Length: 166
Image 1 (cartoon, rainbow, N blue to C red):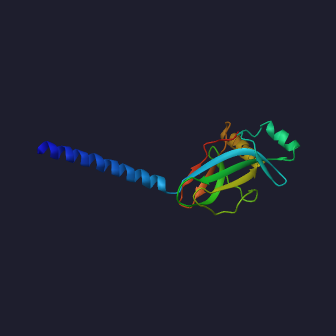
Image 2 (image 1 turned 120 degrees about the horizontal axis):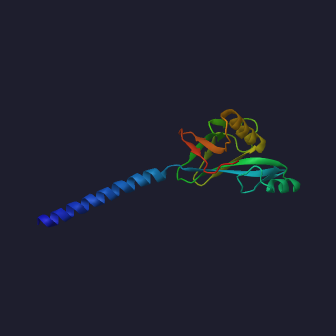
Image 3 (image 1 turned 180 degrees about the horizontal axis):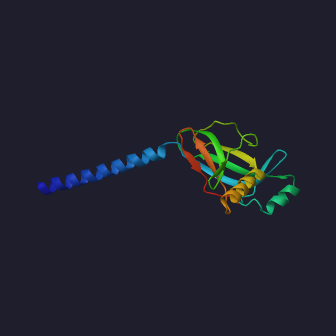
């Protein structure tokens, strides 16, 4: 009888730990989760084209200019991949310790922007502004820097893009 009680007790402990782990994972995965992407593209009359590159000196930009997309832009996309809605309150480009938050040059939806589950919002900025940020950072801090995007959420989280532009 004591061996059976021990086996039932161990089984109860294992199931309790599994249930606790599942509850933690469910809590972490249920809320709003945002994925941020940073890309380079070109803007013309009627829209923008994304090159898929993270380089602002991409040769494709010259070809796109010849085809009617003369303005190089940096494109920031925020996608809610979670189940709960999130609110984007601002976005910026960061290079080293220096951050640039567009005020008048930003192209895209107004902020704050609510993103429901599965929804995406995209903003663009003239590439000359991003280039100026990286140049100023390099001159001020003394080394070459790349820039990444940051999206600030209403719940005080800051989500950073995994891509960087140079």
